Image (cartoon, rainbow, N blue to C red; front, side, top):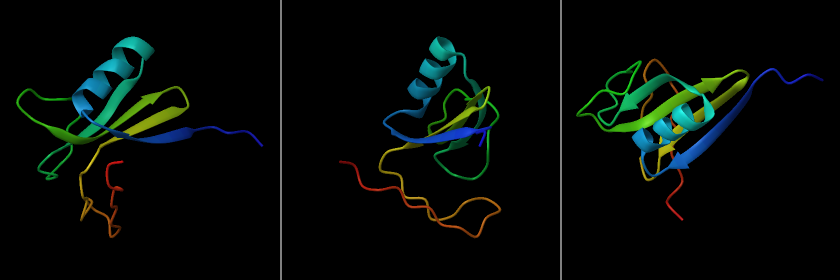
Length: 88
């Protein structure tokens, strides 16, 4: 069996620092980011905004960073609810 895509979900302290690390040091590209207001999706990190979610991609690997401690009650265009576990 061939694996085409691997997606890792990470609980992180800071979305902006996480995106910068993976993009600058490991060559990932930002696919999208969700601001703290959770009212839309940004294709890049904008100055003056805090983020709670980011998706990064490189070759067949996707990284999803979710800020620790954020409770997601809704997701745009979805009927699913996702709740992050409490910080350890």
